[in-house]
Image (tube, rainbow, N blue to C red; front, top):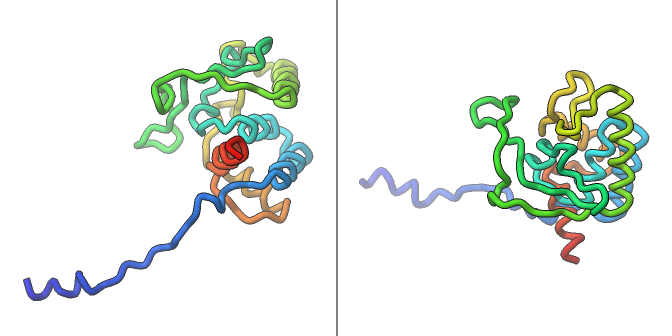
Length: 179
């Protein structure tokens, strides 16, 4: 078709992006955690765990208290809370991305943060031994990415850091673990 020649002469423009730009440095991670502890205390335990373990978003949303092995200092990851593809705020229980369970070690600092979080949840009457670890502050339902993204961007802005995707938590942890 002679009129189609224009398709083959057109150059597509796209932004070159590097995942590396999402990675937070150790000092940036520390600044974000200090900021969250001071300004968004409700979310501090969530981000402290996330930046220290590199959990996937759905695994973090679906983490329940019975998955924390306190004496072993580990998390048992075997389920996730996935977003229903049709409804942004409807969540479904699912297996992990790989369909396999895994053990994630916790450092002493994160264990302490989780113990304090558990005490605060008990004091607020929100603790359920088989319930979700992280809840929204108002409705006390499961956390969701758009809300966590807003908290993360607010903290980055207060710290004077460039905006990053929410998944930067996982990239940062994995990059530092591999280094």
